Every structure is written in C-alpha cells, then in structure tokens.
Image (cartoon, rainbow, N blue to C red; front, side):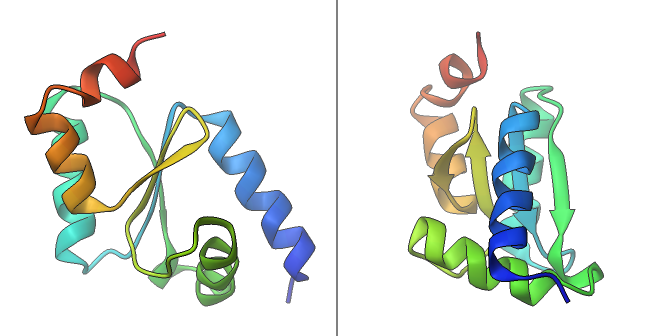
Length: 103
C-alpha cells in the first residue's frame, strides 16, 4: 500500500497533468452528472474511478485532507478543486464553466 505522502504526490501530479480531472465512482449519480456536463461542452477529462482501484479509498481519504470533503466526484479544473457534480452543473448553468476551460 502506498504511503499517504505518495498518494498526495499522485493526486498532485494527476490534477496538474490534465486540464480537467474527476475523481469519481463508476456507480455514483453525481459523478455521472459531472461527466455528462463535460461531455456536453466537449471537454476531454481524465477520470479516476476510485471504486475500480485497489487504493481508491486511500486516495479518497487523502483527497478529503486536501479539499476538506470526502464525497465524490471531486472535480479539478486547472489544478483547482471546483467541487462536485452539483457544483459543476451549477457552474455550467451560470455560464461560468466554459471560461474556466479556456486557456
């Protein structure tokens, strides 16, 4: 099992190497919601399905320490956590999501 600092390093590298990163669980309706929004705006995303990884719950525990919440999805745009599925949908509906994806 990876150490906490290894997992934090993995998370840090993951969120900095792609414009949009979603830590998700394959069966979660809020995760599907977030992925559908990015699909709608034709934004490629990097998805980590935590329920399909051996270290998924450890990653989730480390995400909680980083972001302050444990729920999924945890969506990062340009390395910054923007929240979960409902947050992404709200950003999209307010027209604030697309400008975040440019540049």
